[in-house]
Amino acid sequence: MDDLTLGPDELGPDGLGYDPDEAPDDVDVAVLAAVARIANLVDPVPAGLVERAQFAATLASLECELMELSYIEAPLTGVRGSDSLSGMAGDAAPVEARTITFTHDTLTVMISLSGADGGRVRVDGWAAPSGALTVELLRPGAEALSVESDEDGRFAFESVDRGPASLVVRRSEAEGAGAVSTPVIEL
Amino acid sequence: MGSIFRRLGTSRTALDSVGPNPVRPVTAGAVHPLGDAMTRPTDSPTGVNDQTGASLGDRAAFALLEFREGRQQALGDLIREASPLLWHTVRAQGVAHQEADDVVQHTWAALVKHAHTITEPHAVLKWLLVTARRAAWEAVRKTRDDAKRRAELPDDSPDHPASLPSSDPLPDTQVLQEERDQMLWNSFRQLPERCQELLRLVSLADRPDYRAISSAIGMPMGSIGSTRGRCLAKLRTILDEQGDFSWTT
Image 1 (tube, helix red, strand yellow):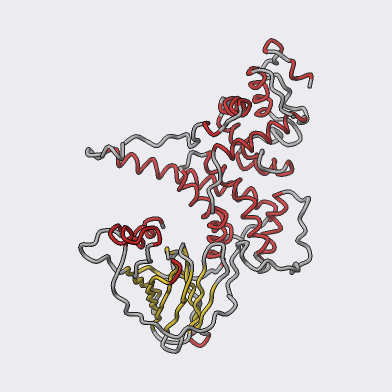
Image 2 (image 1 turned 90 degrees about the horizontal axis):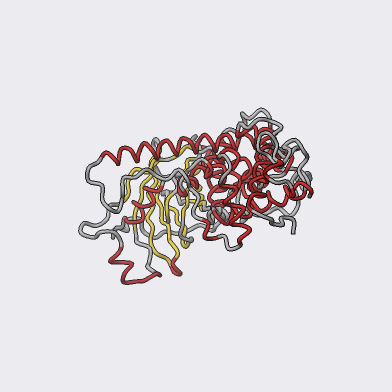
């Protein structure tokens, strides 16, 4: 603690009142702790960053080939944005029905999103060519949901939370094709 | 990705060509997300994931080895623990909020993709920091290029002024209520930028990790860790000039 009494006149040749080569003392430790605390006050880590990062890592770990987002059903002509809809329904606006198509080589997956009870989302999907598929729905910070398609390639998730998600489509071994995943979409 | 979200968010259709169909029961997911919501196994699959006492660098090495063996829990934990360090690394390069969020996510995705090619597991922490810094520089360069292109347009609207983004990503210090905190932060901001970055990062890390951090930042070795280091000595000197504050209480 004697160090603290050093004045500017007693600074070393390089203007430092403290020897950089000394071992850190209690004050050093306390100052560093205060720096960490203040840095997190001034520039806090965004909420949900950890979950988003975990989700990004999960998707990367699947080593799936990424499907292409090839078609999004365009807004109806004359309706600009969703203001007119959400304005009527307030905060609990129902999810607008919309259709998204993904493609990868010969596989095409179309999903239709519509509102479900409690502000949740219903996902109806259809894959072509038809055949048995396993479809997984992944979301940040949540357990994966998995459904099997019927023989026509239809599948559905009846009620899932809104938010970012990705679908992973696994074709049966007989089809000789690996799993593919969709880009992250906002349900 | 953001643009896709926006487009999706405003798309709507009355079409419901995919009619309802029978839904098979939900089965156990074949995919195991890395988040906490994943079934946290009550019994450790390896029996060796008691990493208390090890440094962050050790836990990072452990997470990589576990991941290579197909066990993802340790990586999920590492992401929770080390993302703040990456966040502050990226922000220290002057990256804006949303871009910094993306850079951190991409850094973790990149680690997963390179998991089998990183030869030295104990280099994982440094690898993460270096990768995040490079991606941050790239993001800053891209933002500046975009801003320059926009600045050349004659009809910039008042809502989108043509000024370059501030190189200082830190908001003002209104959030600091205590005089002592304000004084420390003001003193801290007088340090050279690399000193600020170094101290910001080591303040979040364990002392055994200082070496990895300093080498990732390219600061001379021996400047931190077993010694006080020049940056901390300088900060202490500036603090003394500000007056008599007690730091250990």
